[in-house]
Length: 128
Image (cartoon, rainbow, N blue to C red):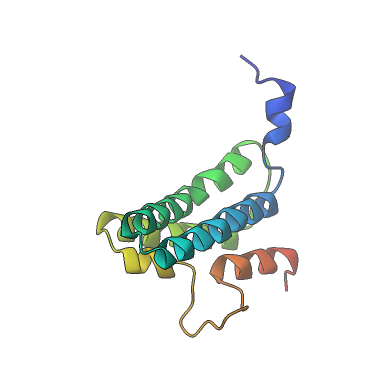
């Protein structure tokens, strides 16, 4: 059965759509995690980090959905999203909440600097 036109319009139309949507979700979750820490709610903090990691595990599937619809996705984007997913899956499998918390954050990142997902978005917007 064909999907209604409205649901087709909601599907991401490019790798950039997928990455930017994912980055917005991650940013929102990171803010939630900080609030949970501030209110000293470890269960909520863990729930939020778990959700963040699950989103990263599912990123390659979202990009694959684009490929299945005939929308090109650069190999580097596919490879990096797969790397994110591997790390996220590892942290989920070991209940490594520290790892989930720092997922996408390169060593030495300063406040205001882009995380690894944001850098990937920038690469897509500004290919060399």
